[in-house]
Image (cartoon, rainbow, N blue to C red; front, side, top):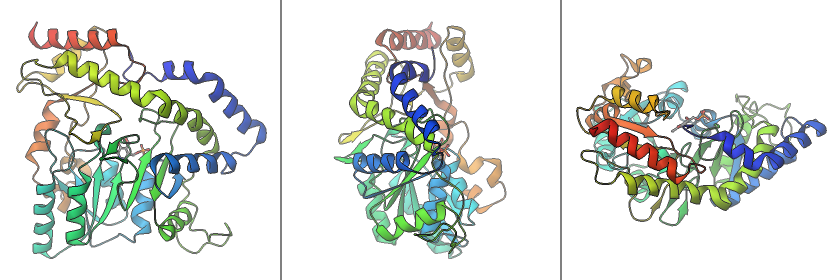
Length: 379
Ligand SMILES: Cc1ncc(COP(=O)(O)O)c(C=O)c1O
């Protein structure tokens, strides 16, 4: 069994993916061009954002978004403590200070009360200027945008949606990638919508910010002339071949994959409910997940390594996202960012276990994972 079976997906989409790749190769249009424009238009239409600017990966997407708003040294960027490294790495890389905030144990997403407490603490200390909240749609589930938005309004903060894992999710009728002032995603192969290498995108409704992002992503170019460089930028474009791969994948995602992965998650929830001490992912009313991961919390004091080993010996791969809170990462050692107190994240890092999930997983395979997990826990 594969954790995320990209081979099964390829078998199904092989003809259109191969044709699209061949077309790019025979046209020799390897950088930018029609395929990139077409996928940007399709992504903007799907998400409901006015502008989509594709780029090299989901990490660059966050950095470009922060640079477009002139975030830098002296600025506090509030980031959930339970997320992939990029969410905090990007603010740090441009000289701002990531300030880590605890998450909720039921949704794994940023806890709004902790967010407000942390903002107040930073204001009271008076050393950093609160500028941005990075809301991560962890494991495919949108964060609580109404509550986060009202905090952002109250403290005049930019809301950046890191939807690297959330593409396809829905929050109260609105699609992920349209929920922040600016939103970013990743097309890393294992993501809900993945390409065959690195890829990413930025979404915004603001024309000026969209133009700035496009400039920053291509060496700070002037809008009309790529050899007139008006600011310091970077080289971060979506490869044309990746754009061509994404097109049929987006169609499959819209037509059945998103629905199918939700069925797989429902099977898991049905088969695992009631297992003593096991906490299953919660999808609150009005939310729809794209299930980048199906993450459970094992009963307290269970030997997680032994459970993983048991499953592995039966051919079932698992992963731990995430094993370390952001504020405990070595990269932040001896910095202000390391001083966060996030007890719920500490506990989650000890307890979580991610089970195989993807749209092509069959009900009998889910059954096998569920039965084996129960056996590993209780014999
Ligand atoms: C929450 C989150 N943010 C950002 C990223 C960065 O995306 P990429 O790997 O495309 O740079 C990831 C990727 O794993 C992620 O999970």
